[in-house]
Image (cartoon, rainbow, N blue to C red; front, side, top):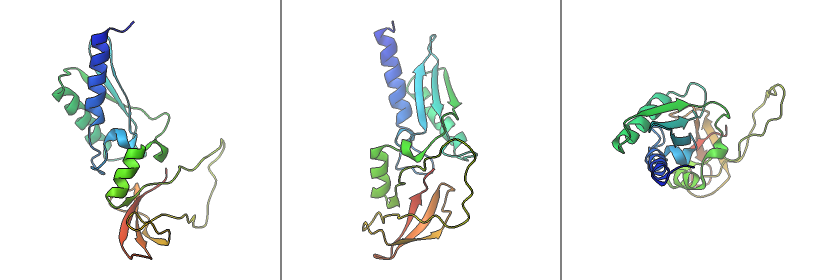
Amino acid sequence: MVSAPAVEQERRAREAAARVPDPELPMLTLADLGVLRGVRVEPGGAVVAELTPTYSGCPAMAEMRADVAARLRAAGFARVEVRTVLDPPWSTDLITAEGRRKLAAHGIAPPGPAPRRTGGPVPLVLGATRHAVECPRCGSADTEETSHFSATACKSLWRCCACREPFEHVKEL
């Protein structure tokens, strides 16, 4: 059985790590984004935090690891390890409802459901796979993609044909 002080330590560690902002989408925490997979206190007092990158080669992972470690140390945990967990892979379905609300409130269209894949080879798609992306400002679905990439590889640039405002969209992954 786990002692009450150990449960309290783990709660404090989890809360500290959950407050770390994403370096590329600072309106979101790593918990909002769903990349913070777990935080636990191991026997002996070491804190282990687990992060999953949003995509392979994500350049923000080093900064995320450093920020989580610094936040945990500032919360009073001397022995901290931040691990990268790749399985199961991250998906936009892991973004919390609060995270989606924050994205929209900051003018970034939240992603829809992640594509579902069955086993076997990944299908080759030769044509454009157009899907409706609602404008986070006016709610219109009459939008157009202006660039498949934005400031980061996980976002694209769009323009609303109704209100004419540009906006970013987090891609479904």
